[in-house]
Length: 290
Ligand SMILES: [Zn+2]
Image (cartoon, rainbow, N blue to C red; front, side, top):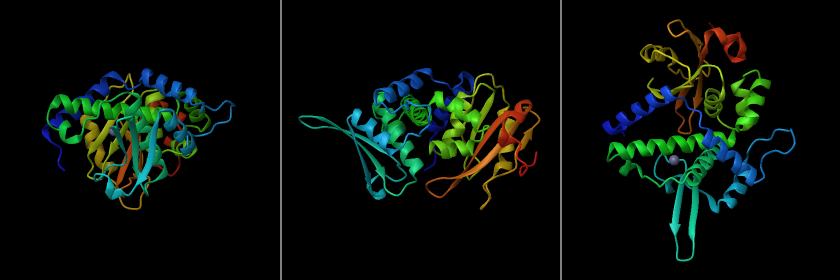
């Protein structure tokens, strides 16, 4: 489906807001921390353990929500998770539906995302309603964005992340394995939680930027980035593309291709200040040209 004008305006407004205001949300970080404490799933010892399905089940029962996997065709097309609230005479029943056969990392993220809608008390906005006005589409975007933020924060908590990322020498891929989440989730947490100026860009297979944000302190010429995008075009069978020195913005860009559920590919691009580059192992590996 082609994006409507309302969708385009709301999305570009929202991206601009993220670029200007930064992205860290202390409120949501505190909520996920409190939830994990309440469910007693924060590791008590110093040994790290990722949030897995056991922990998510524990949270689900605490939130009084039932988790089910269903056949893909029982959900609207493209939907990777659905939260349904149904009031019956004696009880308000809440159910999360996840399609069968999706990757473990996607399933975990989707469940955590639906928890986000529930905990943050979003009133559901069906997509066809969201498309009706700019106001409702803005609200829809804000809800989706905060549910995603909630999921990232629940699965990759702030406290352990700052320790583990340093211990991994800023190796995003290693971190994704460790937390059992996608590369994209770690890349987003990296930009959200790191103190240095950094950027996140997601490019789809038609070389269109579908998500971008930067942390506070970044000034960037996005027109130049749109031109750079073409060097991040995905080629079949290639997972790594060469990193790019962006002289104009004094940033080094590190692109990695990630496969989505629908077997499409998108490129996740991280950028850091070129002066800081030596700190990040991923920007210095020999297989990449610079
Ligand atoms: Zn959602």
